[in-house]
Length: 83
Image (cartoon, rainbow, N blue to C red; front, top):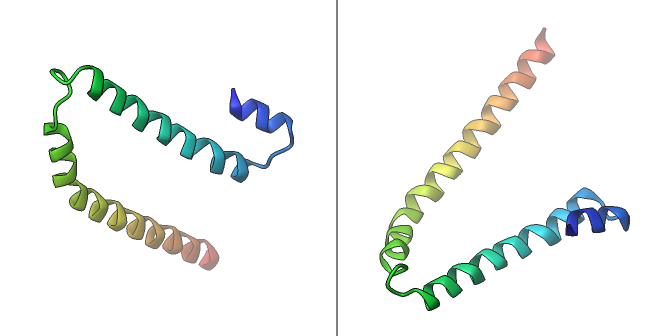
């Protein structure tokens, strides 16, 4: 709904994304914290510990994937310019 509203009001795509994505992140965090507060028997700290433990490897993999993607795109651009 906010995306449609902002589109109608003339916002560009980047501006809409800059507003909507942080709102979604905040709402997901608030929802998770609310669930943890209301149901501590179901939502304990183990997933948070696993998340923190896996975060460095996830970030390293993401950065490596971005670098590989950029190299692949540049290689394809170079090949298309040669052809």
